[in-house]
Image (cartoon, rainbow, N blue to C red; front, side):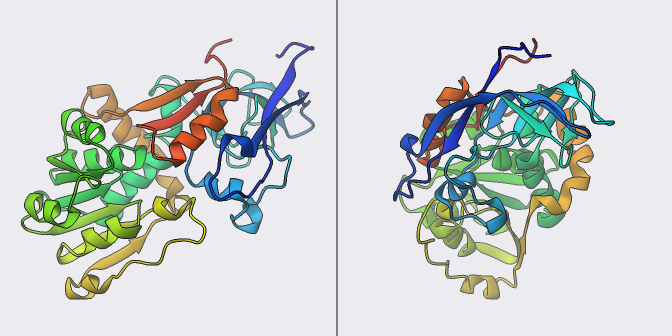
Length: 340
């Protein structure tokens, strides 16, 4: 239960539509804590996920079904705890993944909600390596990339939740993982903690020459979530019959207009296969992800990094740091303690 005097603190969008999204594109407000009606439950937000994709949403450039109006609560995936329920499938005290957005309390009809077992792993991982990002990396690598032992797998954004899941999965099934990141610190972490065989800071010089050096037999599998010139460069180094898995395009998420497309002629020469990945098509594999990757985490074979900022009020600044490439690991906001 919540206290009768509680207010629901929220962060809403102003949709200034500036060229670069900034903290001034958001404002704080408060409302009464809502009361659940029949078939609904009330939950309190514990962790809020910050995702580059929502830069499009905040700019008003998303699909019509995702667009926000001025004054709407900013969208976001959350880990929450059920407080009050008039829903037959949810009870007070349950931990869940639910799209509460940037607010302390929210109602849900139960659609798209996933229950969590806190005994499997820290509940925050349900927004990262044991959630949609991790599922993207795992499915992209195992089911779409299909690397054979000893083959070279190149993973862009190598230390984020998608990349670190793809890269470590590659290593743990016997492939050779090569990462691409945007700083020396991230590359050092990829080598030391994540077990990549090599990692390239694409800002440090000629990416193509670095790739040729660390991938002398070419790239057999590329799991890409960046797009742009990084993808173009990796594609130029493909081995024969390579597989390219496209699971995002962060280089264009907050760009208006979207950058021009890559030159993909080398795909033809390599007789390569390109597959697009939308994680919603693979949600039935979430139990497998939790079982396999969760097991690797518990055994100490799999590592991940989270960047957690404290308090809902910190969300706008933390989100803008993410968009500017200044975050390291899964970007989360701790809105409330895990236990009341």
